[in-house]
Image (cartoon, rainbow, N blue to C red):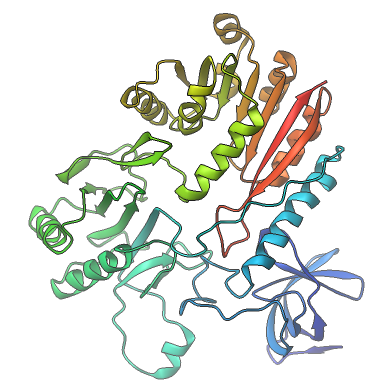
Length: 469
């Protein structure tokens, strides 16, 4: 049944939610139209308010629940439903895994259109809370008020330290307890907020570009090392050193305490000097005795435990015997390259970001790994006939591109070079499926392994083994 709501948005009544689909949304149907809905679960029966209309689909939000799904569980975070970080907390973890594997299968079948083997069961994360090793919190002098806070009529301190509201660059939700990162992450964030409020430090305003405190990054490594990086707008040494000293005294377990002065119009700091106030300017993560140096500008997988499972499966798919020449495309800081180096003859790593390649070289050096070579530059330019002539035709290619997938020139080069095996690691099964269709000219999909790196979210990684025909 349809009716007009008093605000003139169309209301659809008693709609049954059918299944979970892409981007964490659920799907329902009405009058031969598909409806995409967030914040619901398959089996819910709801009234929907239409928020967007297209010829072939609608977008809507639930305004009333008539029946709750049996798949639901009680969310454990007080910020659920407002913070956009963990949108699947209301779904049991076993159900999350089912739909993540289904998402991979649907993408590979519908977009890739290639013959597929039986999938290996998705690798779930042992930790479904406190699994991240890095979080970035943003300051705001005009923090977001929830509906409950507004209705209470109380006065609230608007100086917030937390996460961006979904789709809003200028609105920050103040966070009391976050279940994404282990201790002492919450304690450090709260201590910084209390100190800043008590000492009158001005929280940044993204609209006016005024204020002192910009953001706070906390990294917790599996070695027990701990990095805290404070980003501020101006070089007010008295204010900076006061806060640094407070953190040093309150949290002696911090092994790397740093700050960066950023007067730019955005919060990116990779082109700026980072000052190390205490300890070393980096921390270490570790896998199988290999230590990876992580600096304030380094990329490292944010779920270290599950990254280890991902890398082990990638190495297994590569089928290394000790004699192979491996090309590691989009190598980042060389984590996969260094991880597999002991099982092959040589690894050639290629990455667009020069600073990441410097990290990759350092990670080889500190682990006495001598059979890796790294190149920085655009993948489609570096992966050239000249490179192949210099190092030889690879036996195995491991590729882990960004969400956009591989450039068509890179796919063409892989088809030309024609390694015996390609191990394709992806954080976006849709673009992975697109590339698999292109590679199907000369390759068959031999194995598929979904991996859950981010519990409580819709995101899923996937590993595909391609074998040459």
